[in-house]
Image (cartoon, rainbow, N blue to C red; front, side, top):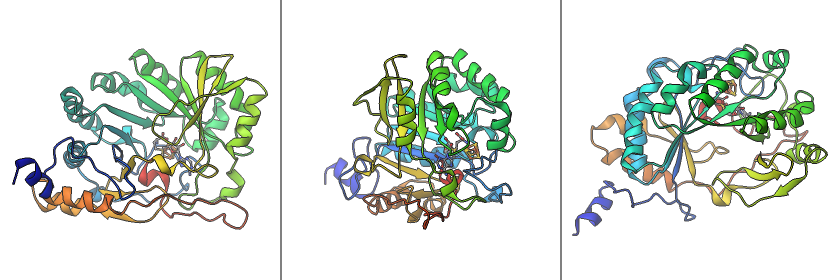
Length: 347
Ligand code: SAM
Ligand code: SF4
């Protein structure tokens, strides 16, 4: 048997032995939640009183590196580090630093980060020196009191200082805004102007029904069709076919020349082109954000020092990736479609 065929059978794959799901979609993008903890308690994301996982259940940073590296060997080209708040995990820069070897080797195209920005002033320069080039910062308002109310404990000035530090370090910043009915509806236009004036992209996100929180999702849910209609009163919005491989659809505001993204998991189906899977901080692989089906990768990871068992578990799980999801929020479906919070699987 030729060596390459033998390698594939044993799960010892080379970079071109890509992971494909039953619908022929190549899985090239992995989002890794490195902690379920966070220094904020955003009202749409977490309950005020959250119970977090015991630390012993988390994968160590070395295990996270091994897991990410196994995906890279199987064709992953982009890794996004998320959480919880990834930058509150102790020594997290060590993970960025060790994964940067794949960037240097050219086997990984990109490591990105989604953060609430609270720790960015501290870490921006180190992230840049680990090869991170772009980050997403979640920011739903530019009003300090409102920011405190949404995040329940965040400090807007600190996040803004973090964004400054990131830009100074040369990181491209995109702002993610969750559109919240009756909360930040009057800020969409000023936030677009603010972001574009600072050379930052901006994307609006619909609230997704993930995890139990105190309030009803129906109270928070604002269809992005309304956000877009509102923005169209202030900007002339040109359709674009710009895609990042993700669920966002983009329009260009002629007045600023820059893009505005819309992520509409509830009102628009983006599953046909889905190239991603998610791994939690305990090593659970979720093949779809909207489904409960998952695979435990921690046990195979710890079962042996080689990657045979782990690779086989990953391939078996990708073989179960569903075709799509079906989130619904309306008056009769105000309960979460999926019980876990976004902070468990990452955004
Ligand atoms: N803590 C980091 C942050 O806030 O950017 C990373 C994790 S957070 C879970 C990732 C993204 O998910 C954030 O942009 C956040 O606004 C978004 N998010 C959290 N819960 C959500 C929900 N129920 N529906 C839609 N977006 C949500
Ligand atoms: Fe924390 Fe991000 Fe969730 Fe806000 S959205 S509570 S910052 S994990």
